[in-house]
Image: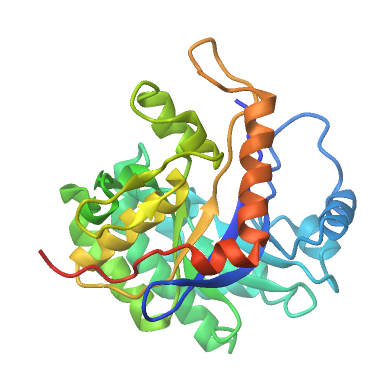
Length: 309
């Protein structure tokens, strides 16, 4: 399955209204054939006026190429490294080796500690997540970099037990204990909650119940949350609100939510319904138009704090 991924951030006011979009960028994957070299990728980002990118490691060639550019990079501690960087000394060595030599010439703005750990097949990794995150952040503090680089972890929407309607959002019971610890870290450090949100997969699972136009940001009647009475004209924003509601249920309202991955497959297996180049283009085009449209952004409503029920 081929994806085009986007990275963007929604900025919320205290009343839950989206105030603006702070950044839009791409996820720069490096697994594939005939990939362009980093300098060509940087040229592409510049031509599209994109100022953010996320990579899934700390590739020295990319970090060096992106020096003196205006592109902010989120780098990644690979999943298999989590048991290692739990040790504060190992975390300090990792940051000293993979971050410090490149910063600030390379604008590293975030460190993803693993990717989708809460739903990873290797369940043993979950126990390492919070200690590893704390250790990496502690290393940044020790080196005086914590004011410039945020630490978090991207999460799959599969971490939710309920996501519809958005106000019913809740985390799965088996991860709630570690999730509470992780949210406490985010709250105490002012870091965002990152989600990998794909309307496509929800549509694929229920094509007879979910409108394709609703999933693609096309014009559609949308849906109204029966509890909050909020109207949603696209699935992605509803997914964001479901995460916000889930965090509020654990007592952590007000944490910023950032979409670390989204997109639509342009090709897939025979059972991958509507995985076409046309739909992938429509999703990305409509999303970018929505995010770059000041009027749409100001009028769209997403609540950051749900009242307890």
